[in-house]
Image (cartoon, rainbow, N blue to C red; front, side, top):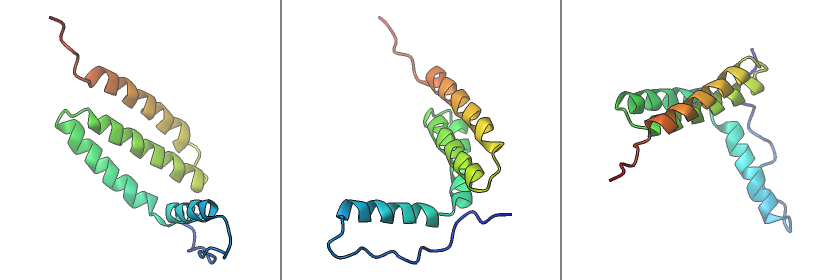
Length: 107
């Protein structure tokens, strides 16, 4: 099975006189490659479950973020079946979010 995170990049330093924006963008990309997405997904799953269990609409937002993370994991590991399944979940979470949000009461 492929690794979920690549090895630490060998060239993490900026070049003198280089474009600082490009360097900053490069550092952000390095950070994204370092983050263990499986652990992030685990934390987001538990957090979403707790929030939804407390009937808080923010749980649906966290669940959608988690599905996006699972999509990235699926692409990185060439398990492409995760992508359409989690895109469908994001659509369901969006629908639930719209329906769970408190309705403004008209007087």
